[in-house]
Image (cartoon, rainbow over all chains, first blue to last red; front, top):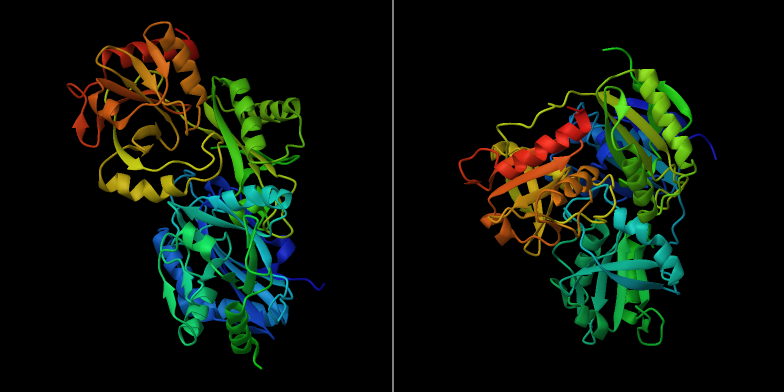
Length: 275
Length: 275
């Protein structure tokens, strides 16, 4: 693999030289936000939506972005040209900055990285298995750096042979650590949570597509509704629409991706990859 | 101020050169633990208790410490000798390490820093004002890097002219972000929470002292008991015993530190500073 470049504030440097002093509030206190989008054939996908959310997260977490939106977009485009990777993920991190007292927010540090990856351009025929876990992210409307719970749960997932975890709280389903969750009811109604979770960019696009094909609603979804669902799927930048065939050991139907999930995935993949 | 040294893994380097690559899981996902003790006249205070907790936090958060306890203690002693600061705080951070996928724990990075500070050797006669906030730390038995809530609340504290915040959940008081909380009842009973909070080293020492002087108990303490309390104080490495004279605008007694708080602080300060 050729050398990758990253931005650390205004320096475009080699990834192995990309460092932050340990006084940064991310190292000291886990404080920061980020966003993440993919490129397909070298082109950013839903970049403006991701920039919207990046700025929104920063405001929610009281981080002041000294660069304008155009400047950040410009850095991203420059990075993509420099690294010249066709299919990739681009992560933009904003930390709490070099805090003199290690407790109050300083001038944030901006880090932009890119990594190549290959995402299947068609829906997985196998789907994934999910377990539920009672938890609700703090500052759930912001994409913060806080993944303590998710990372801590990784060995539990391996032990239970699960691919992902679905957080739930107060009897309502919320989100996966890095993805949104949808269910399809027995009446082909498409439902996804609306509160106390991060509103994904893929979720937004899938909601729009779904609204043109099915009765679709973003609202509180109970654990009971999940148990009675006919199909389920998750959405994210790296997973597109990924069928969920099993939750907590309960298999949906015949254990294969359902027809509503399939129809939405076909339409979604056509939209982002072309026909 | 003379140049300060810090440890980054096995390198004892100047603080301004102390950096971590941005692939570290603290920068990527806010993942890590730490501990913090003070030195008085160049001597570590309750070092073994802090090492106990550092190792306990690491186990709770699934972080593997490759150094032995003796090696870490040795590095700390060497750092204190090198920096030669009489009164200081020493912070030992263990991050999730350079994670190839940015999501699974790698070989942790160990960072040890020291900063000079002056703590009053006698109890504050003014005390502090505290507001309550409904919140409970995740992984509350571990001293993680997660201070999202605490840092986010800083401007709220300033606006409300409060010095600190007391977290509470399910009607029970828990802890301040960096300190434990005690109340004194009308019958001179000394109470401090026991569950869903971090058990401080200062708290442990104060509990021992208090048990020899008053009816003392570590158990669930309700918000109602806080409202009916006669005195309150917080304990921490940097605050020792600090009287709380006001909670949510309600002033304790005549607004001056109470007699039980005063008696405990005198004994505690004599223990750590000598007579």
